[in-house]
Length: 219
Image (cartoon, rainbow, N blue to C red):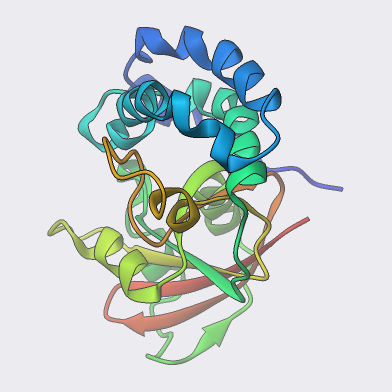
C-alpha cells in the first residue's frame, strides 16, 4: 500500500517555530483522559480554551503549532471529541490553494478540462502535490461555502482546490465544543478536525476557471 509523504520539505523550509505551550499538550491530554463526562470539563475550560486558542486558532497568523508538530495535538483533540461528542456529517470540505512552487499544476496538466468535467488523475506531479495538501491533522468544514471562503480569500493565480471526503472520520466537532464553551473560542463554527493518514485522490472536477473539487478517501 502506498503512503503519502507527510509534509513536503519545501513547506517545512517556510514553517514557523511552534509556540512554547506545545509542551503542555501531554499534561492537558492526561487531564482529559481522567474525565468521564463533558460536565467535568468545566473547571478546566478557561485554561484549555486559552491554550488551544494560542496553539490552534493562531496558526493562520504564523504562530501556534507548526506543520512538523501538528500531529502532537491529535491525542488532545481525540479526547475532546470523546468528551463532547461528534455529529454525523455525510461530507467534509477543505479549501486550499496549490503550493507556490507549482501553483498551476492542475490547470497546466489538464488545460482542456471543461467546467463540470471530471478526470481521474494519474500524474505523479498532481497526486503527490494533492496528497501532501490533504495529509495530516487539518481543519475541515461541514459546509462547502466555508471551504470555498478559505480557498478564495486571497487574490492569487494559483489553482484553488476544494477537497471533499465522504463519511469523514471526525476527530473533533467544533460545534459540539463551542455550544458549551463561549470564552476564547479556539475553533471556528462548523469546523471539523480530521486526521487524514493515507489520502487517495479519487477525482478532480473543474468548478470554475482555476478552481477544482478534489474528491479523496482515506485508506
